[in-house]
Length: 183
Length: 183
DNA sequence: GGCAAATGTATACAGTGACTACATAATGCT
DNA sequence: AGCATTATGTAGTCACTGTATACATTTGCC
Image (cartoon, rainbow over all chains, first blue to last red; front, side, top):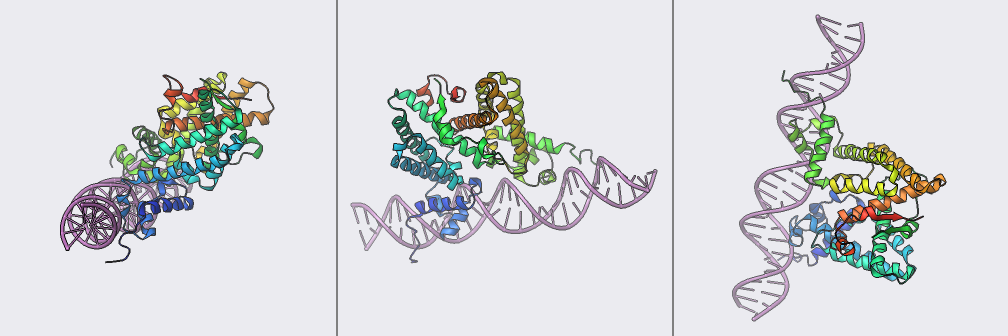
């Protein structure tokens, strides 16, 4: 009889609220399904109708991160590698918790596809900058670039570079440009 | 009157047992203080005499990881960046859970010093490879190299490259060992 | 209109980190 | 040696978590 017995959009709402929670506290392991449900105003078990368990919620959120990153890169891939570094850096700085989630892809999960879309976009950006290399080399460069940027943001987000002087830390765009994967 | 009321070496034992637990299950958030205590045969609260909370235990373990990595690199730093990649990748492959811990440094924690020792060793390795560069560039290169290798192992350990690696390089997935940072 | 599927609620359980109060052993001072 | 202090253990408790099971309501389809 109640008007809002059914929420109507709980799945999407959970993902959004999880994202907010990660902004308040970037540690993904501190994220609680019950608290999200409470905050949304729904019973503590309702979320389980949409996600088999906690990990699947995190996976869905990480996928959103990759989708946004890919879209952001697509908009400005004219700029090449700089754009790759910039897009990832900005995301990692604004939402460190989200960035942390994006380091893991469960096989069969949503991240699997979304991260591939991101990688494709990186390949496109690299191609624009370095011109017509053979495709395999291109992909390897893209992976190297992604790894370099990811590594730099991981180091600084984790505080591993805290206290080091500014001049000691390489710019991630420069680094990304110099990293190459041998075959 | 019992013989073993005091364990005698509980702190070290906890770290060792935590490491084992991470080998059984690489997810650090699944690691339980109580279970470790149970396994050691000590009361569930005894560990708290040695670690103010769970995070400090993880920090201590991560520090051990950095110490070993630094020592391992010192033994073979003649080889330059490849040795860096090799040492890190081997560690990350054998103990992914430990590698995950090593992405975070609490200010004032043990990782802060240990990771600096590791970085110093990386600088040494890079210096051997590229010869006498000016110190600033050297440190930047070292950090960049660390980041690239870390990023690479994170990508493959996280499954983000699943399905791609064997496509790119028939037979072997040890991408990190093939990372090159150009000057 | 009625019935099945989707989506919500209520309740319960075992496990956790962490706190407090207390017990015992080890250490060091006199 | 004797004794007080400190280090290190135990016991018991609390609020909280993920998740399972059983039941209720709503929605959508024939």
